[in-house]
Image (tube, rainbow, N blue to C red; front, side, top):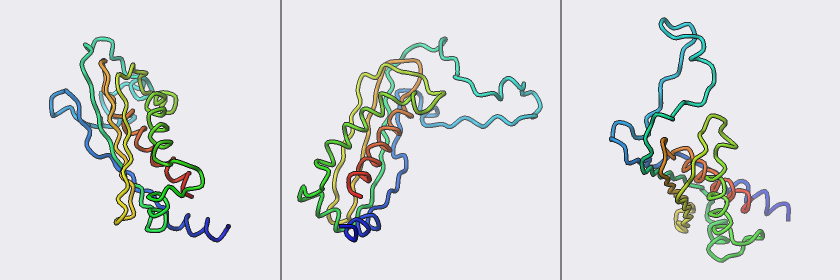
Length: 169
């Protein structure tokens, strides 16, 4: 009933962080976040500070791969329900993995300056650490293109984690 739902909500918390991001680019280009444009900084044109999708037309397509991971802390009670297949909404891991894959494919719809990429592979795996009361989510995405797939892998992992939370709350 309602009391059980409140207990589950208290037991389920989400902690998401990027795990390993890799690319078949030189090591100094892996998971590097560009500096933020500061308006009014000397030598920076106002047009460069406006939101824009970066032009990657001059970049040669290369094989790109990124992996991201996060953890959903569910607690002992929810971990037992997951292990026993007793979650009311159904097979949590299968649904969450499919949701993560779907999210990877739709990343540019969520992140407006992200390039649409023809993904060649998207995989999401959810693994229950029953003793620790944690679900570990790993997303692995690849493509051949002019830009990396880090955002797609992060989006896949985060969406799978959100789905786990939604189904267990």
